[in-house]
Amino acid sequence: MNDKQLKVLITGSNGLLGQKLVQHFQRHEVEFLATANSKNKLSFCPAENFEILDVSNAVSVGEVITAYKPTHIINAAAMTNVDACEDYETECFAVNTIGVANILEEIQGTDIHFIQISTDFIFDGKKKLYSEEDTANPLSNYGKSKWEAEELIFESGYNKVSILRTSIVYGVGEALNKNNIFNWALAELRAEKQLNIVNDQFRTPTFVEDLVQACSKVIELGEFGVYNIAGGELMSMHDYIVLVAKYLGVDSSFVNAITSEKLNQKAERPISSGLNIDKAKDELSYVPTDFVESLSKIDSDN
Ligand SMILES: NC(=O)C1=CN([C@@H]2O[C@H](COP(=O)(O)OP(=O)(O)OC[C@H]3O[C@@H](n4cnc5c(N)ncnc54)[C@H](OP(=O)(O)O)[C@@H]3O)[C@@H](O)[C@H]2O)C=CC1
Ligand SMILES: Cc1cn([C@H]2C[C@H](O)[C@@H](COP(=O)(O)OP(=O)(O)O[C@H]3O[C@@H](C)C(=O)[C@@H](O)[C@H]3O)O2)c(=O)[nH]c1=O
Image (cartoon, rainbow, N blue to C red; front, side, top):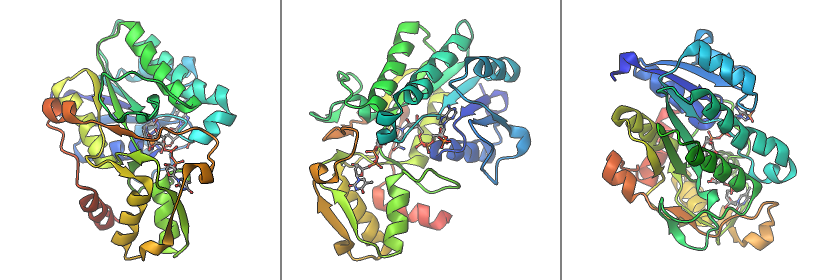
């Protein structure tokens, strides 16, 4: 299938990944429909390419898919505030699990390639680095809701699905959620405020543009199955934010190291939920951007 034959439906287009996908398909002149649960917040997304879509509403999901007839659906919609998912469990499962059930229901019997974005939070964090075959054991409502969505996909028997699991996605953009640690830390460090960052949670932070490339690659190759798509470096969140501070030229003494116990977040987090990306390297020729290089790309784009 060449670029001209593609029709990509994007959900969650106002979010970080959603909006980078919009920009990617614009640049490559691929036909797309961007959808979000509220009005279009993106200055660069034309009104004719946008529709409101709440993925938790089965009727709306059916109407949009039937009318647009996509060749591909990328589900970037999710309730991503992990602590809020503890307080608003029903909403969390409505978006993250039922949203996926609604899409699956609609695409059964079609040829649509469905790309679901999942998370390292399906794991309990006891293993350091996880491969695609490792056993899930989510600790939080968010993790459970994303894992149940994956289970629905496996049980549905629908086989034109790529599940891309990722971790701590970073990048800058328009009208982003306040709960993205990277954007929050950037703003605070630029204002020379002191940050308390945990040194006992380890992740493989993922440059959003790498995740976009991976979405594009599974489309291009027609690859189905589960892939870990993450950065190549496992680091503590404290080391991560110190690198950001250094890049900004802010003294690292502004980044205090604390424990998770001290931070006392509502939802339990995995200790170490790095993602092993060997499969994506082998099968998708996936090459994550070096962390410091990604920061300079972010800088030059803004
Ligand atoms: N950010 C990260 O570190 C990670 C993200 N992921 C996954 O990656 C994907 C993209 O996340 P990311 O772009 O970073 O997250 P964002 O929070 O930036 O974007 C998610 C978007 O989904 C929207 N949304 C919420 N509810 C609905 C709904 N009912 N219908 C349609 N859209 C809805 C949100 O809107 P609103 O703001 O109005 O709620 C938001 O714009 C998600 O599946 C997420 O689970 C996985 C691992 C790490
Ligand atoms: C707000 C805050 C966070 N942190 C740490 C805790 C945690 O390890 C890390 C990120 O915290 P957050 O609460 O922003 O994000 P968190 O919910 O931990 O991150 C997750 O988001 C969801 C969507 C995912 O799918 C996961 O892969 C992961 O990226 O930063 C601090 O150390 N200090 C702080 O003040």
